[in-house]
Length: 394
Image: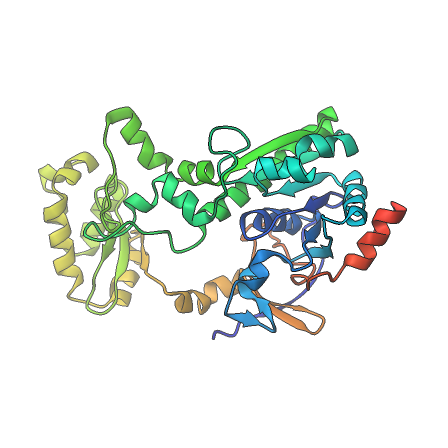
């Protein structure tokens, strides 16, 4: 396992300082949304069932009893355990909602209404609340009350049908893509709604769908079909509107190569030592090169097999040709460039040390240092139950 740089918990960004978020979500999409808000300085009150967020149990692997899926998306938060079947705990929740700026939920709409956790219920407690709902299919429509996970959303979206080898079955993306995209959308929409509330004083209902967030990810593949009837097919990552945009083998390890415009095309063939091939008139444009893709790919592959990956990457870097390795997660974790950027690190919070993947956004040259490690289940229940009782700032 790679040893990462150690970073002490600190203040981080404060752009959303003073914004209090009541996070009623579980699993990945909702917790990721609230973590993004926390990275910008929002206070997150994570409401958990007595048995905790589902993701706490997603393992192995575990680190000191904590699921590493859970710790990936829950830093900077305060964990409060409430049993919403209990009338006293429901009253605590209502009191916390009166003090909150934002509520985030991932319950289907029928469940929201049944539990009194829907937009209408929260606006009775705070009329200017920002209510952010993340569901599989949205709050309206014929599928709105169906349950959903990332896998299901990916299947609906079309991404699985165009991912993988043409001779093989459809494949899921190798990460919870629909969850992460929907979480980003929810965080972005929440900040937008908060900005508008600052101007107008009005709250907002935000409706984010895993299927729609995932489908929008495919917009550059869906649009050619809607406009020209060109349906994408599963091609092992070799089919693109850009003629040469795929992986190639070398004498030892594969690399990726993207020849996205005519200038790069010319520089590439100079770097390969065969400018005459690149200057052939039948290759004069990207559209023309697409018609000749098979011949071009065969020529490139034959040359690349003569030397190692690192040999070619050095040449392409010097020639300003977009190319790169195909990293494993182990390779990624050992990437010192990401360490130097403060993107991969171990967070030290008191006696706890937890690996973290950073926000990846710099503002004024600064990164968002986490203010605290992912919370233990119920770690902050006492102080926030007291807050709900007194109404004073925690």
